[in-house]
Image (cartoon, rainbow, N blue to C red):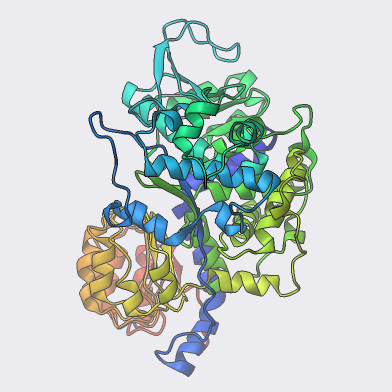
Length: 622
């Protein structure tokens, strides 16, 4: 958002290059924790750390619009026929109304919320229903109505000539695009999916809640079918007051040039240019360019919807001064975790990219969890912090901790109440949100347990999509647990340290390894056979094989000659025979070979080959 560009711009850049950020942090924190872990290995051998696993976290589930093939009256949506992603979401997710104990006997706003979710459920049970599709503003057959025309007049902050862009309109967004037709169509569909997911999860804060309440006020599920009811009593569509404006550029360079315009950058062009997208609340516009990872777009769209689609008093700019600015960013960071199937979506979950960094910080680096009191401050307070990356990680962690609980936890209620206060929204009619409680004294230790994942957790909450970052380092995951994970060919950062994963599962999960940037297998059950996987990782930048029985053949198999920067080989079986190979890596910056069979001559040879090398930074005691 533009009121926090100094923060968000830099954070979005960190998000885009998350592996680079993780690598630097991990390298530093590994040095701090290495001695303690070395002593633990000596003391307990191959046993795992004795940490109690947390209760399985959850994710919040929502429904998506369904397209209908002409000529087919019904779509089979039984659990047995769901696509894998939808089946995983159904198994691991909980509807927001279920999480808060709302049902048909609820009253007031709670009942309105339940009825709205039931409209979506009815759409899934009968996607061809014309009256339900009309009420939800869905076209007769497609999942979203998209119209396009040549751009005539651009907003004043965009010096675009007529016909140099197209305008794509959906029911809830207007996209001014210079991207390709296919890209524009895809972004339009993604934005509508973001919108519908947001309205289901944050219904009490949505500006459409009153219209929903009026339209469905007389519907009794026990006496009337929803399709019939909407046909007779709610012929009009669910119409809202505005479309949300998005500017879509064709590529990153065009994005950087466009947002450098003074009216957009507000004097902070260099900061914004480093971002993956941003929302300007002053211009009431989001700016994006095409990317494979849509999480940054989800983050900024979440900001936009809270600012523009919430039932707030438009004159209030509470996000500028709220002391709960951590939640403004935390809730958008939580929304980044959105994953979709063809029929269902979910937000949250142990596999959220943002949680992987927090899990490493907490379980491996033993960094303390920041309390909400420590995170509090307004935008200016946060801007002055020297630990912005950690602040973001902890703010998003606390939001996940509150929202990813399937039980009727007061933490989830507290999030809704805090958001209502930040955005100035009256939610007094929602009884389910009234019974809130302050955090208990042991809340920080509960966050630790929340991050701890075990076999039961993996089975109960399968990954819906193709994760790009996985860190289960230090978790209570057995070899059987690793076998439950799907193949993850797009994973960039994979950390299985201090778990009993073996060569076979590493190879199966990572696949061809061409996307791999960081691989951490410290103190695992791998053998020299892992070289087959490492040989395929041609873009690897950081490799940790410490405290494993790997030998010189593994070092010889490293194919990422031009990209490798950091290698941890502490406690392995390598010898001086590996020095020649290590010496040929032009970008090698850090290597640790303590507790190996590399002798002083080998160390001197390595120092001579790479004069500025950070050699043996762990400084283990004799």
